[in-house]
Image (cartoon, rainbow, N blue to C red):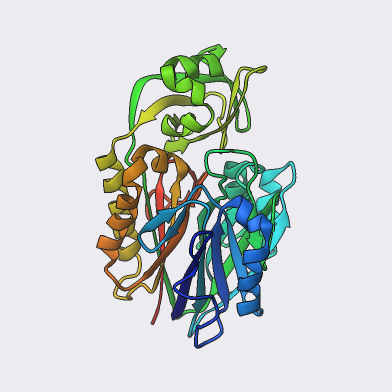
Length: 377
């Protein structure tokens, strides 16, 4: 596997050089950048011109990861040329039924010899829980999915997905990896702790939470946040909820994506089912870094004896807000586990597609660090 990674910023242009110096043609190019930069299109044109035959796939972010650097308002480009693996993919428009969107996305991908799928979706236009459920219904049961929901910093105005070199909102894309020489490992971990009482979700609709314990959700949430309430919805990323559902599923984090003062409701990245119990979460730096280390270790174990060449990191925007000036420590924790070999790329998201436990079904996660490793033998 050969990889070329370059980065563009307004201050420095392309570093360490313009794209296009990879010796072998890449099958796909990962592109992560700010929403405004991707929609402007001028920088993307450099990437399309460098690799006109490659799949360009990526999304807008709440922060871009390039090696162990984390930055905003940049473009991180990683062109990947496999030796024994091929890729295929598709993109679909997101409609009002996110489950059906997931099914359509899965159906657009050939299933024979499919080893893994990478999914990015507009973080403000989709119900991530239902999208994951539709993908599970449409894909072979042994195929794992990783990826995440596109971000827009802490602005929550518009997110977009890049497919075949075009950035567009209201889109979900999938990239499939094929071939028996490919090995993929993945790990996902949080590091948050719960505080305060569990509260029953007494009224909700999809990802919109109206009432907890019969009280208006937004008013109750604001009382918990205190002085931080004035910064909603952005400060809601620092105080997510953790769910315990009626069917026994525990540990699903949910990040705030919006509020409605008129309805006194809170909008989350995934489902907030009635009858489930919700509890506030908090975190400190050390616990988040420990979570990143464990996610990287799990992704490395999944490769067995094969060495990773590429690691894709998708971490929640709330973790970035909590870590603040120490945000690069999280990525450095992954590097310490991986060693100097693999190229690291990725982004800070509005939600992560991953399995919390190896072998379990993938779900929409929030407030986690997800690591996916790729290697060939």
